Length: 388
Ligand code: PSV
Ligand code: MN
Ligand code: MN
Image 1 (cartoon, rainbow, N blue to C red):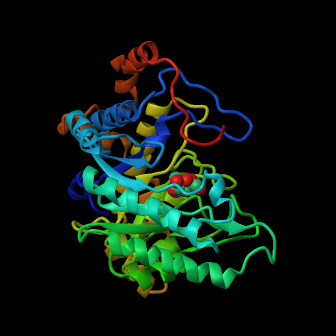
Image 2: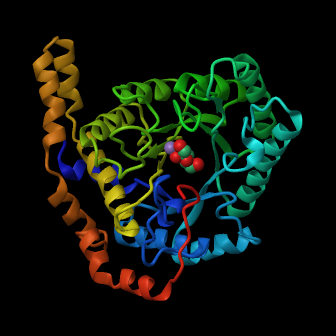
């Protein structure tokens, strides 16, 4: 097994993007609980995200959601982020909350609605130009509830046409990532339900269109690490939305529900070159903190990813390859499990200190007074955007 010192180079390159919406109030269709200290503006969301980065060194960028985070002056917002020590990251489009999109957006049979949805994405690329963002992330709520409600084939063809217009507008350094989700809000069919559909659509566009894999967007029992392997093998894994789930798209803290699954995913990321310098894979969180404190929730999340990554890097790959070649099933499985069961927490804590970071970022945040300060300064925080 490699020593901890042998994996710190890779660990020091790790960057996990935070979603602005994780800092807003969120909930379910039953109730949105207000949390003291919740940001009132996008500037305050960025300040909270920058706080997570200050305590962990793991989260140098913040994803925005348009129009939830819309401002008049994106160049000024970019400067605000940089002043706080972070950059603006992925721009997320939103064609799922307006009445006009009731029957679809980029797939809509009415050209006028489709044009409005396309124009929204073009406006998002204008935002990216001003913020310096590389990625446009598209998740669509498009789908139908009843067999016969829509022409599945026609919707897929229109999706391809709409995406081509959007892709054409990207700058040479910009990318489009298309996220899939097997159901919800549509319950019969979803227009981008799985990695294969996303892969087919982005492959038709070009090199700078890739798949976004949200860990919460699969049917129970799906072997997600297999999908990770396949997309890396095909050179089309653009980004992760990390979260964890017990039932559906729960958006809980990554690594909370199934740390072993997170480890297995990261083993395939490492195996497929996803942690190497210049890798196209972007790591993001897509979570909501409905009942727990938001900033510590994000700190815990990025630490969970770091811990699982360390374990994945500790796999003795030479011994594993030998055991696989020998057909030694139990030895091979044992080698993987040895890495998973290795407790890396003390090594990570000591290593953080050598980098000028707190050994225990959760405790350091709790002792910092930041939470008390925002709770006294901020009154009337924002909702994340849905769940009311
Ligand atoms: C909806 O399922 C969703 O959670 C997708 O995962 C998106 O990434 C996110 O919303 C933000 O649009
Ligand atoms: Mn997502
Ligand atoms: Mn989701």
